[in-house]
Image 1 (tube, rainbow, N blue to C red):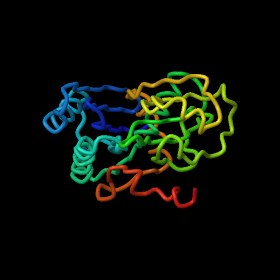
Image 2: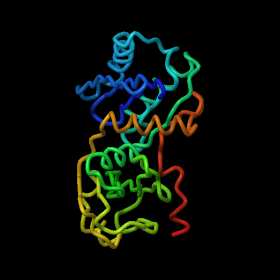
Image 3: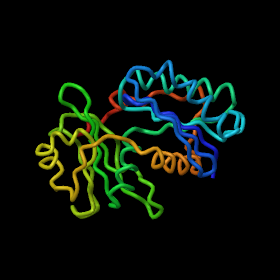
Image 4: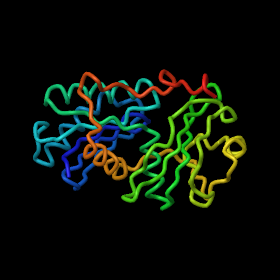
Length: 231
């Protein structure tokens, strides 16, 4: 396994996790809007306690969105600086993938229908299924749209194998109508589990899903979507 430092500043919590070859330690700052002031000291503290330097890392990971613009910019900016200074690659983790991995491990079902709140009544949406190792894989593209305007890929699992997860399930009735199924479990929470994100990051590292410091950017779905024209 790899030594990976993970940052998540995409929510009100500022989370720094060190995955030291599978041994996890984490620091979570719950003070709202304190990310910029706290994250570097968290990084320094967690490395000091593990008796590691940034040069000892194999990679740096960041939960890069979609989410709060300010929070994402802070996390990605810090990771860019760490990666450049230590000559380490970056793992870009989608918030939706992180939430899918969390739901997969929490509910022990292979399918995850992830929906989180965006703006103007829209939601971020993605379909994930778990592989034989319990790592989630994206099915079709992540997207952002009104709940009744989503492009739904073929769902290859029966309804009782799906979890609907994320605060976008506030639009439960519209989503069920659009999807054509009712998930076995609907979990409206959007909290991410650090251990689950680290397992996802370890898998991405092993698969070579890495970028340079210069290529590490916030993950803004709307800027990259083409499904509206094709739908």
